[in-house]
Amino acid sequence: MVYRVAVLPGDGIGPEVTAQARKVMNKAALITQNELLWQEFPFGAEYYLAHNVVLPPGALNDIGAYDALLLGAVGDPKVPPGPLEQELLLALRFHFDQYLNLRPALSFPNVPLPCPIPPDRTINIAVVRENTEDYYMGLGGLTENPADSFNLSAPRKLYSFKATLNTCVSPETKAAFSLGLLSEPGIRRITQKALTLTKARGEKSLTVATKANALPQYYGFWDKITRSEAEKCPDIRVNLMNVDNLCYQLPRDPLAFGVILCPNLFGDIVSDLVSALAGGLGLAASGNIGDSLSMFEPVHGSAPDIAGTGKANPLAAILSGAMLLEHLKLNEAARLITKAVAEYLAGGLYLPLELGGPADTDRVGTAVADLITEPKRS
Ligand code: ATP
Image (cartoon, rainbow, N blue to C red; front, side, top):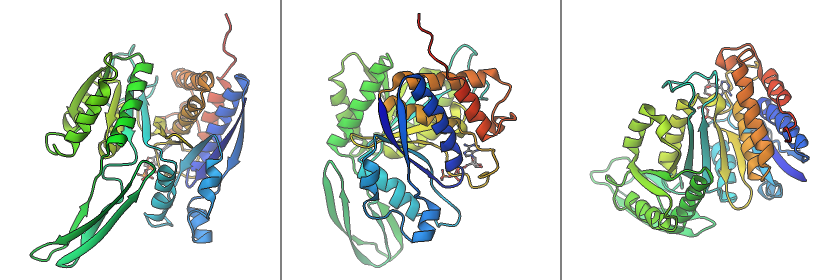
């Protein structure tokens, strides 16, 4: 089969790591009798500086015509924080309603861990983060006058939310606010995804982390909907936890956890903690998944401090590529990539510079690609 994949290499080390991911993905596709046709999109800091626009009209629709998107990283010290994150990254997530942010954390051989685990065990956690609601909806403001009025609006695929907020802060003082929103269909669909993933992994329990004790109206609502959705899957036990307790338990016993479901804000934080527990940014892959175009990207940023030096570890981008292939149902190709990464790291001789070895970005990618070989037929 032929698949059409969009790639947005972006800034800093983005182009370097996506080039290696493409090399490895092409090899895995070829060996499993598939072909990837790539279309590169130039958006990012350079494009913005040259054209004074983050995305030209129609760009999102053009990208949406592909089977999936591989993203490198976006961000450059020449562009102040804001436009690239909001008009590119968040625009992609919202336009394509990528409501699932999936962040697997796998430990690999020869990757130092902050909490040692028995040599015969591996950390294998998947954080399922709701990606479109909660405190990331862009609904907020700053009160600068004794009385202010704010028109808040969030058009989404599932619904459109509008509110007018009249504020009066007395005595007059500056105050910032942010409105979080959790909708019943939003919670139901992400809970379904988490339950399906738990089942697919052959596990019997799903951890759900909120903070219903402190915010009962808000996260209590999430817990109630999650519980009622989970009743449809009686073979899976739902373990509701407060997120602070989860952050305490995770480093003490990471092997006790499988799938962890969180609302957006906690998911962002917990998934970073889990990546650190499993070996750090150099290996952390992610997917932004929805019912139309899904986007796969390493968790790390554009790392301008090491761009062009060969120090970038491309394994996170390569593992994100494996997630992309799995999303396209190329499960065998995805499995071959993960296996090759594990074999490469187990070899231990030519580890990436980031892990204290001698291998630059290109050498890591080539070594992994070389380890992808025809699966043995019995
Ligand atoms: P962002 O906000 O876009 O995530 P950031 O500045 O918070 O960006 P990164 O760009 O990910 O974070 O960089 C954090 C640190 O980790 C930097 O010192 C960078 O060099 C290092 N780093 C990030 N990714 C890699 C990688 N793939 N290989 C080696 N080092 C990396």
